[in-house]
Amino acid sequence: MARDLSYLCTACGARHPKWSGRCDACGEWNTLVEEAGTPGPRSAPKGRILTLTDLATAESPPPRTEAGVAELDRVLGGGLVPASAILVGGDPGIGKSTLLLQAAARFARNGLKVIYVTGEESAAQVRMRARRLGLSESPVHLAAHTALRDVLATLEAEAPQLAIIDSIQTMWLDTVESAPGSVSQVRACAHELTALAKRRGIAVVMVGHVTKEGALAGPRVVEHMVDTVLYFEGDRGHQFRILRAVKNRFGPADEIGVFEMTGRGLVEVRNPSALFLAERGTPAPGSVVFAGIEGTRPILCEIQALVAPAAPGQTRRSVVGWDGGRLAMILAVLDARAGLSFAGLDVYLNVAGGLRITEPAADLAVAMALVSAQSQRALDPQTVLFGEISLSGALRPVAQTENRLKEAQKLGFTSAILPVLPRRAAKTGLDLREMPDLASAVQRHLRG
Ligand code: TYD
Ligand code: MG
Image (cartoon, rainbow, N blue to C red; front, side, top):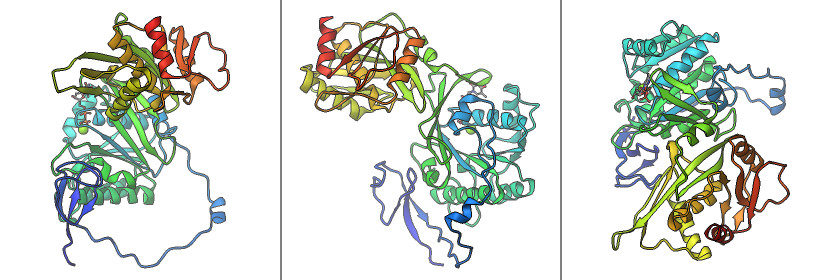
């Protein structure tokens, strides 16, 4: 077979015929590495063809198994689906192994046969961690392998209902020429494991480290192969961890589960709003509370802005937990539609608690945090905000207004600044200050 040499991006897996400094598929720099491609299998025509009506008589899907941890079960779409392939990605050290060992113990306790394959740590190390987590008595089977052939043989022979592979980057197949962790190895191993999941009805969870650079392939290169993609996120300086579904064939994407990393492992957080707001100090200019929605659940969090004179010729825009492009847009709209310029000023924006917000519904909260920081006037600390801002400066209503208001009321807030509602929202005890556009909200704040 001719060796098919090409360059693969370790971030997204795109194939390029020539080397270049930047991958034009995903835009990352210095991620292209030379790799021998693996020829795809040539399949002979075989197999039976079904029609959709044939499937109607097929048995209904087997029931899901719940871990009994609400934060995890919800992200999975209501529990673990048999024969599904799940990827759990995240930065090294964020807590993936801890999460999965705890989940393994829960599922084992609920009657599933679980095998935890560790390629990264020795079995003794995993046992030590289990002891620290108070799980040393749990009936989870451990296997320390890195050769995928051994993993597949073990899983075939033992036929567990759940297998955890920690991590996919340590696994290697002897039929693939390149080194473990390379794009070709990671893809080939994930492909074999996914096929095994379907063939033997085993739910397979693969751990993937997010890699910043170097020759190690990131989890993105297998996202398209699996049924469910979860990312475990958080700021190492904070104890909060968020498990986020970015793709799920068996449930809603965008669902999140919130955990806290403690000395005895991860603890689920049933009321994240209270936790995210707990750190809030005395009302300060630049601090506002955004009533957000993550998946199906409302989450209130604090957005902080700071504005300071810039050094001549170099204004800074620094954002944590929110999109930098979106910040630039809001600054432009504030300038063009509300007459507030941030030229010559450094702008810092921070979502407290290490949360990352992607909803445009946070536009109004971000804008008012900036206005409050610049005007040095604090907003009423009992007020929440939400609403999307259009380029014209108009405020657009957002989804799940009622859920946002209910959560705010539950946590003791008394008023909300929000877009004009198309019809009257269900009665809440909150004082609703509906604003048609950003300029009205800004004027009212500066007057009030
Ligand atoms: P780990 O699960 O090993 O991360 P990953 O598998 O994503 O690389 O978690 C490592 C971090 O978690 C480590 O810095 C120690 C911390 N940790 C705790 O704070 N409490 C605990 O009970 C455990 C097991 C780990
Ligand atoms: Mg680990």
